Image 1 (cartoon, rainbow, N blue to C red):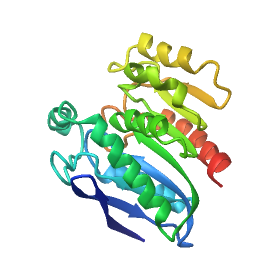
Image 2 (image 1 turned 90 degrees about the vertical axis):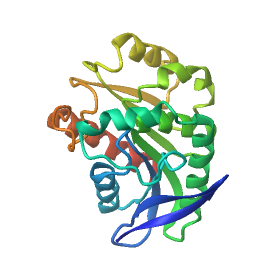
Image 3 (image 1 turned 180 degrees about the vertical axis):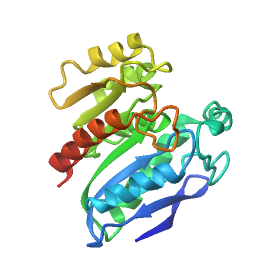
Length: 230
């Protein structure tokens, strides 16, 4: 039960991939893309969430630059990085708020909505949570820009589960330590560390994927979403 939705936004409208649970209704989860766009991996995450009873919506966060941009694996990194460098994060914050409102407005959504994202999407998940106080839960996976946004940590009020690989060549240990320190006094925030590198959850990027770490992180994520959205 999948389809693409059209979401109105400032300056136009954009697509979002929607996956519905078999029951047709459930809590909502926004799924934010890596630099590869809404590809097989992100659609697969949505489908997996739908299989676990959630209404999953993945908005196209590159629509202002290249609508429906999609790359499959590591070979698409140069194209994706070029788009990230041009991404207007202020406009992206507005687009995420529009996607959140759209998901909450679907008859299929029973009310509570969380967000999950990977790499670029992890950063976007943090941005979404700090700009939308009504978000019910957030799960940023290895968000490479979060350490530069910690000035807004005071706005992070929803339960949040961060995932980081301790051997991430793109996010040095000192940057992860900044996140640890900024979140230390928040009882509803957990920073999970994994014996893995970057993008360890992306099964569509073989040189990065770490099956053990991915399974460990997903078990934690699954329990976290169930506790905060169901």
